[in-house]
Length: 317
Image (cartoon, rainbow, N blue to C red):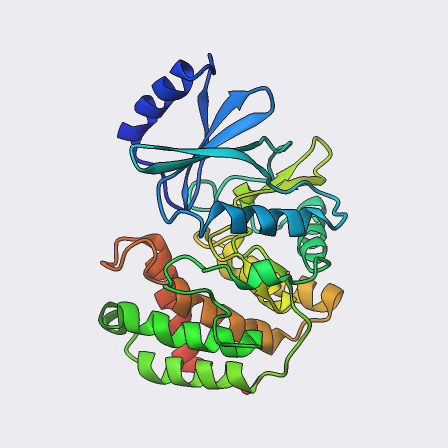
């Protein structure tokens, strides 16, 4: 996740106060911008990064998700405006509090609680119940230059093409950190294309701890911050990525990935080898989204995952 630049914060607070919201305050910072609480059940999202690919499309995707009964709330856009060329969306405020802090700031303990893993399973299972829609197929994931599904009829083929495009974006920087990069890219794309087609569902793509809100009993009541890798695809991709990004930086990160992978495989019937393949694809698609000079934690995390893949060799999923 990124943080919204501090110099923008006071300016936006003053703007919202002058626009009739007497007590605005910063609420959260995500991959796409900063969220402010305005009061009255409304929030404002200032799009600091890639704006949504058309508010109409985003609204249709939100409506497609909300149309299906879920045990948690999801975002809905209420209105929008532009200020000095910056998009601001006004949305309903979602309930609850983050399940836990981001692992970069507060690493989770080695033993995840039963309530935490159950909340994760509820969210992953719930999103997997939402059928993919035409609007979802028109979404572009962050960092790419076209809708993920453009020119494709199967998710594995669309993802394989994205892997190849993303590896070309800043491939020299990634290759410096991953000496075996070229064969990893080649066999990952080939393994993806060899996967059978599966029914596709809504994919959030960024179920990090702050994006799941819970109530006082630890039950998930809201899922927020769609957009980073939101698309329609194999629900095993969502499970695989969630297992990996839930704890990216803590001392027990690999243990948690293995634990959650096993949980999702047992409860949802996903193949662990396919999940491992999807994690490699995710690293190849997102490695450069926050920097490539080696100082960015996400880049280092992706490089480490890919280096492990280079050692273990191809996965004939």
